[in-house]
Length: 67
Length: 169
Image 1 (cartoon, rainbow over the protein chains, first blue to last red):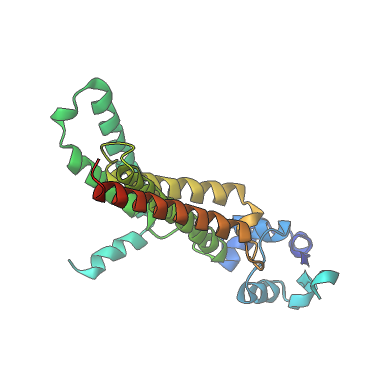
Image 2 (cartoon, chains in turn blue, orange; image 1 turned 90 degrees about the horizontal axis):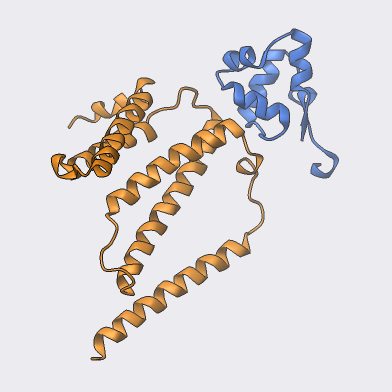
């Protein structure tokens, strides 16, 4: 699964630490998600999308083989 | 003891306090052993203090207890617990097959497993290895075979001990 979390962060000029604090997670969690190492739970994905005021599928995209 | 006393583990200072005092007691024991002044200290009491402070450090609440931290914590606890059981089993296995006369004190195995948990947790948290977060979708046949071999070895060693006990030399 790919994600555009880094792009959304860059659009709003937010650091990983700031986003982590807003979502009440650790900075390493945000970093892990951006690197594709960690797949967030549904709740966290929804909270991320809600924070950026976009849809979940605009941030998190399934790969072709995962569909 | 009131259960509310255990809520102290939820405080952020519990982990640092536990690690600090565990370090002091471990250092005290090492210095006593190196200088040959082991008789001057109450070793069992020191070991219990080490165990208690490490317990406090390991089971205290993390500063940020999000889902990624919980996955790493689960992996670290699982690994250290497996090694704890393995350590105790090998320890008693050695005694069963008469390989060594005295067993290692189980408290040292318990202390080692708690220290191992702290190392695994913090290293995994820092280096963020991807394999911890991968979902295990396929059965790992290799690990099952290894477990079966170990169990068979323990069973054979136990049987050997029983037979040698029954049959007079």
